[in-house]
Every structure is written in C-alpha cells, then in structure tokens.
Image (tube, rainbow, N blue to C red):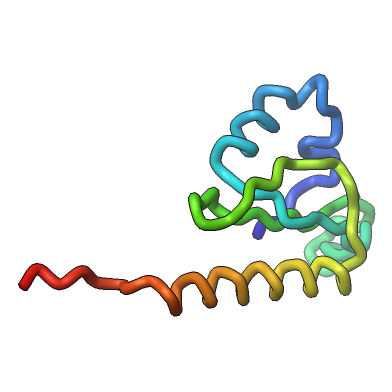
Length: 101
C-alpha cells in the first residue's frame, strides 16, 4: 500500500513500461482518491493524491492486472480485508517449515 500523486500510472501510454512492470510483480487490489487537502497541515493545500494497494504475485492467487479505476475508501477496505483473509487461509493450510527428519 502506498500514497502517491494522483497522476501516477494515470496515462497508460506514458506509463506503459511501469504498468507492465507492476503487473509482472504485483496483483492490483484497488486504488482510491484522498482529499486534495490531506497534507494541508504540512503546508500543501491542494495536491491530488491517491492510495494504491497491491499484493505481491503468488502462484496461489489468481492474477489481477492494474486497471485505472477508482474505488471508494469503503470498497477499498473491503477488497483489502478479503485479500488478507484469503492469504491467511492459504497460509493456514500450508506448512511453514518442512521437517528434514
């Protein structure tokens, strides 16, 4: 999860190679906009910003490529918690250590 300028990965032509690299390494979970005044307390009064949430690619989860669509913060929270639960369920069924006995 990271906070970045709203313009990051907005233009699929300009950011084509960056989007391809992101799709190679990560599953795109969601993104949502935050208030332009979110950083007002530190002197930035109007800065379009977004939160992007990705998950490292795994053979155990299906692949989700980046799409430049926005979710509401509430929907993003639901998406993120569903993916965390899926990962926890997988981890619960796989041994963490392999016995060498």
